[in-house]
Length: 351
Image (cartoon, rainbow, N blue to C red; front, top):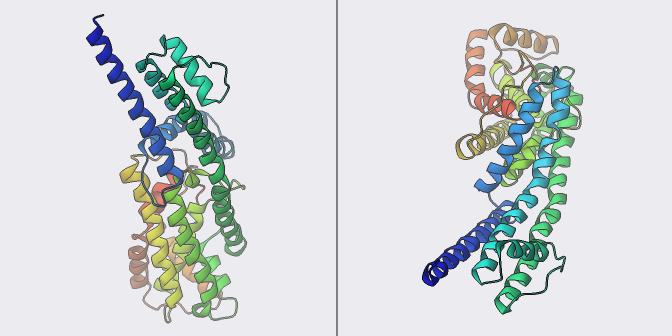
């Protein structure tokens, strides 16, 4: 090969390796350091590739419980795979740069890159430029691992706070959990419109969901410790409870409940748009049969009957109440159903 062509090839290879390293480092920083919900395409490709494998394994399971056990491993495996992919790409990028500065054959450059990245020190035969690359690669390798390890406590703290609310909600909403049962519990002292503290706690929960599940999207896929629980169905249940209160119960609408309903609609729809419009993920068809469907008029009337039995005053115009309930649910139902299918969440009765 002519010298000028070899020189051009080395320049292009070196620049390509540099771009690959910078792109990978940018992905790591945007994943764990940048405090905003930004899609990182490299991470999306990793997550979607691993999700395809888990979807295939879940589809051959003959029960929801087995599918849930399989999918419970998806988020941890995908999270651990991130630094592996990042470091593999960095190794490839530096291999190209070592070859560009004349460190020897491709095999030697690959061995030098691996030795530097993993700080093994098995190869110390390099030039001045090779030494600069070696030390920078070693520092970068440690940085990538440190980023993930330092943010694991943050991820699990957010997960713990989320699941505490989900577990408390299950205790209050009955088995299976329903909006009518939860609304009846809120009416324990005969003044459902005055329980602002509980609605305020749910409002803060929704705000945390919006922030944490868009800035750290892998957190959405961490499943609840119990197979029958899910943050998606819990969020939908709270919103259904608010919608049922506003539509069916005759009386003033609590201001705090209105704020919680608005916060919940914003949170669920923003997480939904993050995955649907930006990440391009498609929901999977792995929900248990019959779950996640919209409530019908019969279910709504039954919920009203239950509420009346618990001492709540129900609106006289049941048809108008039903229409208002449907309108309120339309503000979040699409987001809840999409996330339920995407995350393979267990269904709950909507009324």
